[in-house]
Image (cartoon, rainbow, N blue to C red; front, side, top):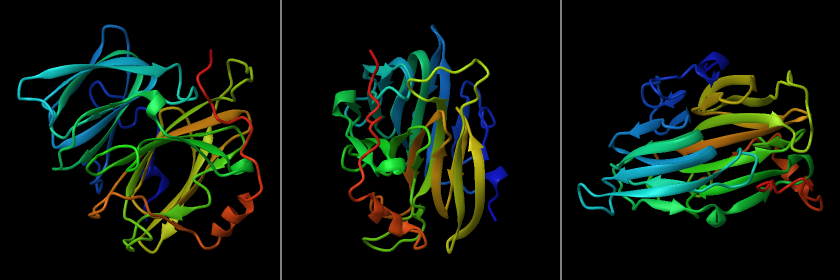
Length: 305
């Protein structure tokens, strides 16, 4: 059985070199997705060497300059520079993102926190700068199941080889990744096989003031499916990472007084790049209760002046 200690990694537990967290095939059994997270100070740089992976650079807080070369739409030796307009925090609406073609190298400079989603692939798609006003923003669910999804790396929004990348903002007291669902068996047109990375951040609920000792947190849950055994119910905080190779997962719960964010990176062995899920039959009926309910009026979270 995959246990909590093998699934949820506290901030820094996956540190490697200049990166606060690195997820790749160096983790036993992990094959299809990758993630890098780091915090940059002025004058610092992060290096992404050329490799057989596609990448998506996602500013978490702050703005960044990415100098990249070797992508499918550039001649050997050429490079270009992309300015990514970021945001004060992950709770301030969408951000610019940069898709880096398979085989592209890059250097990231700026100030703030940045994530890089990855997936091994031999497919080559052109590098692309997706500006924040181009990012599809979805308000999903209703009532206490309301959440905000930024679909900058989904098949509908981005031409890519393998991965599906999005981010979710769950206001305090709300549930997301709900009802519980899975994507670990290939059932054509109904369910796809996708391993999944969750990267979390938490903050005091937007609009509230809290004392310095406030400790924002949320919860993540995953449990066994026919594809494999797993048992996770864990507190999560800023910088924590959860790896879900299989199983039913959900909910992610934002505690009262604290907002919850997560970045999702998904990819798998199926020939089609698609997110098809199956709801847990014990809880899937809950989707029907959203009809007639309003979306949480606190959403959407947009950039504050």
